[in-house]
Image 1 (spheres, rainbow, N blue to C red):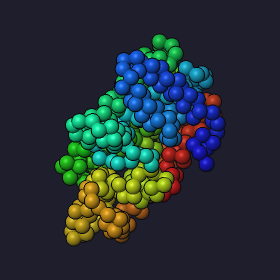
Image 2: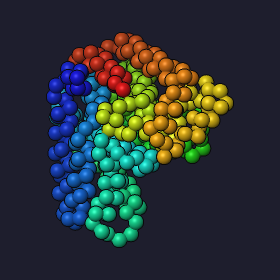
Image 3: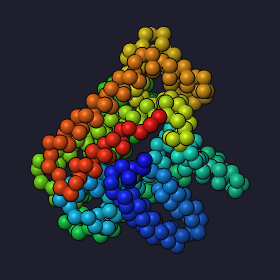
Length: 357
């Protein structure tokens, strides 16, 4: 069952995608008027943004807005669609930093441009070109997120209320990305560091900040924003923990990434930190040696998966997801919401955390 059906908003996902498509048509014109060579940039961004994706962040923002009493409008849908451009930027840059070959079952953006360079017979280093191009495309998406919010058609007062939340969210997600690569470089596998990375790289900007963006658009009054944070932060952490499990145990046909990719990339997640904390010295050394090895084969992935299971890390992470989700839903029960938003946010909580392996 798809996200849209689960939330009972049959057209929200389509409306978000329509707003994105219309905006990207305009941006294509801007780029190709600069130079025809930029057509491939427009093609790639359109394909990346419009193909795939659950549109969770716009959904949380929209229902945060509606729950605060906001009335539905295409302008608000366009405003919350801007979150998908932040997501696109983060994913494109993440794939560069992680040296990921694929995203959603297709070549990652930097690999796509590397292939373009090679097949075109251009001069210079194809890999460096691909990396540079992907960084710039990610920058386009980040800059355009601000432009789409501004051009959405919401009134000036709503825009001014939304800006501080929107700006802080973008700062937090980039800070989280840096902490992620810093932890890999320093081999910091502590539970505390893993939790901090999860909170800022994903948890806040997946649920809490979108909800608060919606609340700001609707000019919500206390105590609703605090209630949204109490619901959104644990749910965002649960979402990231589920993502971490999928990164190790997920089915590539569902995740669009090779099996065990997070292990090859050396991700210092809560799942890994939990395994290392419980493992004996010899077992921990095997896990550390395999973690971050780009040549880790299927057999090696199975060895590390077995360690994660045997140390109880998988079970503890699943239990933490369940506890965080319950805490989130209890917080949701404590706030009064308009327009049937409580039912929608309950469904979104399950959509975010019940994703299959």
